[in-house]
Image: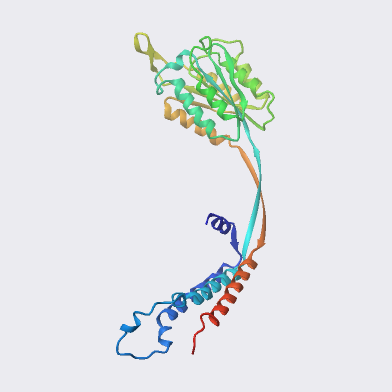
Length: 333
């Protein structure tokens, strides 16, 4: 049954209007059902009790077989008239992907709980959704605090990337906020990239206070390498709850928005401010829309007529009908 279904799924009809002729089956079937018995010879008997003991033969039970064969052959001939055609399609897809590096701040201030459950975990979750939504792009991950290092090089193996993203945690490197180092390391990951579009998404919740690379100089290098940098300032305006050994306390949220804005402007990117989980997700969704992967698809199609199979089937059924009608199921006038 599955083979028959899959066969008809690949068939198209050049003249589907011929299927309207199938409506003629309705009056023919009605005539056979309501009036055929009236055309048979009959006689009157006083009682039918003696006929009840007569067993029905296989000829009587199959008396409708010739008519069914005739109707089926008619249907098959109509299908042949509709010109069934098999269609073969071959798609040639050319993908013009984007190379992306996520530069993620993992400094101690990312423990703040103005995002649920904290800034770092919220960023990891949104970054995971972003990665899953771009299956054809190569993506890498850089983390930074007082210094920076590559957590995952640019790769198309997103399963490995997602696994390394989940392993990101606090206190694996010296604390601080080295925005210049984070940006410089991300640029280095894209240095040998041959992609037409190269972008960095840099997220920070603080002020540059550590590192060896000047953020402005790093931005200029990115511009010269045609790397676009989108910057995100993560944190509420004012104060944010922060976990300590003495309980939750409020800390001041201090983000160098001027620096992040300057980096984005210098490289042709855009600066965003995210103050909660929903706004952070909206930021990544907006970046995702602005940096779309280009797909060029060329479709080659070849069609072949398949009406001969139905025509031969109809002829065979019609021959079988004629043989049965005038031999085994012959009716005396």
